[in-house]
Image 1 (tube, rainbow, N blue to C red):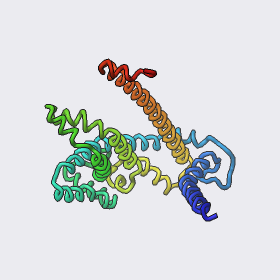
Image 2 (image 1 turned 60 degrees about the horizontal axis):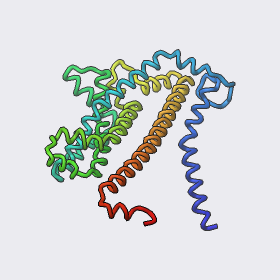
Image 3 (image 1 turned 45 degrees about the vertical axis):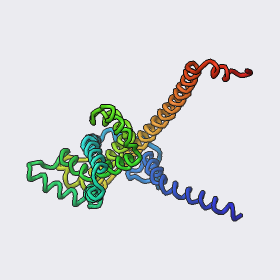
Image 4 (image 1 turned 90 degrees about the vertical axis):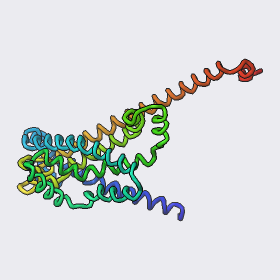
Length: 294
């Protein structure tokens, strides 16, 4: 009984954890098919698909979604190179300077989004930049860059610097070393950082509210709808986004497994070719020694 108790506690904890994590999503998805004008599952007034039609007809919501996607892509385009450069800079300076620079680069993460939004608006208005998509990209990137920098820095800590030194000794330029050695090593982290940057931008509200100008992002649009009366059409949009996310994750996982299987077969083929080549290059007595039964 004492041996089974920890297992039962762990299973119970995991069950509660996943229920807490996924139950709101299940309720939101179920409310999409309820005929009620309000996003709820009780009372159930009948099953309907009308809210998907309402979602399709809501032009303002689609425009807000397009604006959020454009801003997210702009944040990726700005945050990735700047965050990468910041991480490379941290890895090349002295330890004392590294601590100071690290603190400065991480500090935007500690500031409230409201402060970042207001300060960005006041600063860029001096240069004639008004609220809109460009200013929203600049405001969001000011703290999302720190996420990219942290992810790339963590990856660089496991990087073997002797590879770069060997390439430089063989006559490669610093640009060639970066393109052919450093960048391929960082590619998985950069892809993950791009995804994190997009999601951070897509869900941001506090900073975006002050710098958006007359543009509406999806989070601001939904918040406005909550004040004037939200409908299950928003739930339908959430269900569509969940389905797209699951589909993308499934495609990625299948691609990853297929690539791993192909790499395994390629590795076995190269190992066999290497063994055959080694036997062909070996002296005759050594080749005879490998023949079974001799």
